[in-house]
Image 1 (spheres, rainbow, N blue to C red):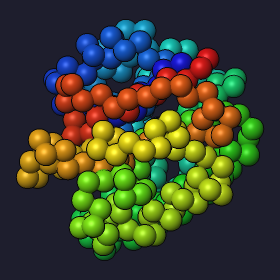
Image 2 (image 1 turned 120 degrees about the vertical axis):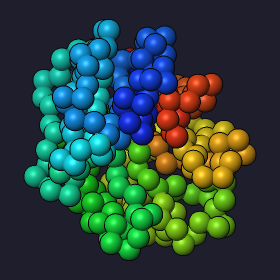
Image 3 (image 1 turned 30 degrees about the horizontal axis):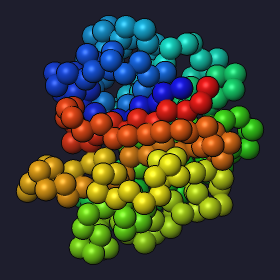
Image 4 (image 1 turned 90 degrees about the horizontal axis):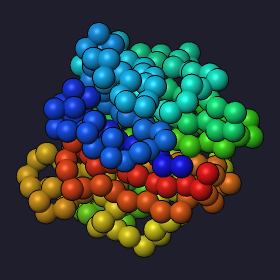
Length: 257
């Protein structure tokens, strides 16, 4: 089983940059998408359901903003787009597909980099989504959560960790939230389980400011997070950087079927 997750920074922009021909070459079973920056009426049928895939999406109320989606090969038994949590639902930050033996979620957690108000909003979302994750893992199915968490967990996960200790995305409270998810809730950081020592090659996002991409001044903020038994099925992974579809790079992990 092959799973890809990618923050698109605009699905129409990623389309123009060649995302869909590349996806055809990947033969992935699931593709999780974040930051659609589009509404349903903005998407062609080829984008809604590329060759061989069914597409499911949750859109933000605000046009040209946020939004998540999942492409899959088979029809799920249940699709959940709304959690009755306005902070998450209104911004299109969660979608879940349930199958007989697997739950797959695409999530886009907010950034707090624009200021104190948005950082407070981020903490509110983290608190509420953590409760959702706690309930999901109690269901006893394999669960994989893919997405842009907007948090680098450890110093190994960003180039300039010393200069970002007081910045959103690397604040102690955010990092502690991830630690709790992994140590207490029952999930694993799949990529880091596979590659515990990799650093510079592990980044998934580069700022558009300066020459972050050219200098590889990156952050690892995109994750595939799974329960313990599903994590054990992971056999290999990579971050695709040969072609840029976004300011993020696709995170690809292969699992035993």
